[in-house]
Image (cartoon, rainbow, N blue to C red):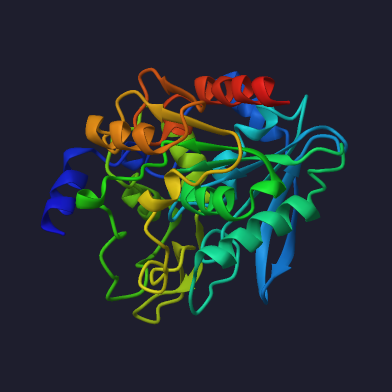
Length: 315
């Protein structure tokens, strides 16, 4: 934990200098987020799951899945860039975003959330199966589904979703001992926002967009009124089970693409070598230049182009 804290201190909080104001953003970004999705909830195993959709029903379907502690709007500036040619959807996993928390989480629950979203968003209305894109943690249930339910998927994209060799297998963040912190106002909450795992952020306008939508009202701990706290379930990893991911790589039974940030600290040489050795030989694979782990934040336009390239190859 101490090492993790020192790594966070290595990178400045990207929104602190703005003191609660919105950073300036380029025109393409403002246009993308102005292309607002349809927002609703679906129920999966008793939990309300947040679902966002863009594009015309009947076009080829794409489901975008976010990473740990994130939410559906991590894709709300990427999805519109795909929606002219595709029906696009994204969800907040249970335990994250505006979706309900659960007492426990497992890969079958998350797989059910994937396929329930595909059905509810009508991503198969063109008569084809949908393509599923999973970033970081979102790639783990995607990989699980590609092994156990390949007949339901046109193909899957693992976007800087790293499966380490067995000797370096990651078991998730340390267990949380307390609830998420409550901040007195938006400015102080935004000042604490950092990307995890720690990295630099050269697009503060994206960080601001996702951070504001990651917060919800909550009572101040001292009883002084309402403040703001993070939406994600702090006990998710404590209550989460997943089979060894390395054993799943060689069992993928549908088309797969592996895309990663060229300078991603998670995609080390030995991790990449392990994944490519275990995955089928005929996968699509390439890196995004000048991108770290959070590729859609580091290089949003290149990320959209990379996804478009895979879709063009498969659809």
